[in-house]
Length: 337
Ligand code: SF4
Image 1: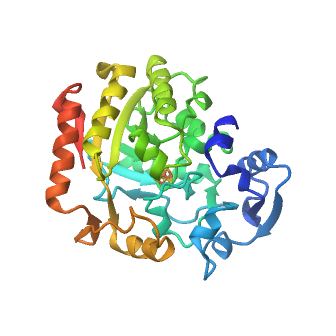
Image 2: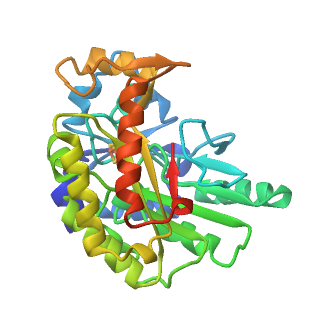
């Protein structure tokens, strides 16, 4: 739990709500064993707690609670337009957890959910069943750590390891596990799997210190990336979201120079660039809840229900970061969102 304790709100899991239906599930028991002092409260359905009216996301962030539940109905969805498919035709995503142990200022989850509490769906077997059904129809590219950071939570609940064990040897299935964590050691005992992509989001140290305060520093993330590559894992670098602020050119230049002084470019699977973007309704909600956030109050422009930087700025950002990456990577390895 060392990394979790240092960079997360895990210590605030003073209360754990458990759906009656999953109270004896092996993953529930495993999670509960990690928090012997937490108050356990039995509930019928996670929405009783998670979707209560009049919750304040900002206040709850100071003391997140944990909710263990079973996800019902559909659990795998078609990938949304605002996300990069990395050239994969059958792009899907899933959310084995709702919310994140980190709390980046710009995170759309703050506008998406009514609660800052963390929900973990322990019925992983139902996720596997749905993937199994999809695989009968077509190959699947699945983004796994969506609406959360699963690897950051691996020592609370080993979902990433379970998924890796599940996908191993399935040639038609590729999964991406996106993270800002420095928790590679939770996976380092596993042999690498060719159809698993570990995708690290990288930001300049100035951005991490200002807007991603609970996440590990850049140097730790780079150290983890290097270890994963050296062990033979496929690694993706995600420069997403790139933020626009004073001297951003300089900070992203430093970031990319530093990144490739630690990791060999030829060992990188691929990289992505995306500017900050957020659905209209989420931004509206975030502006109400976080009235003093400079990043949330930037005068973004709306296009097709998505707020982002004005086109000129967006082009400037993408063009510049692309140029920086081209010093190290061939064009076919750089994906732009
Ligand atoms: S790590 Fe990702 S999911 Fe977690 S708070 Fe930050 S932006 Fe949101």
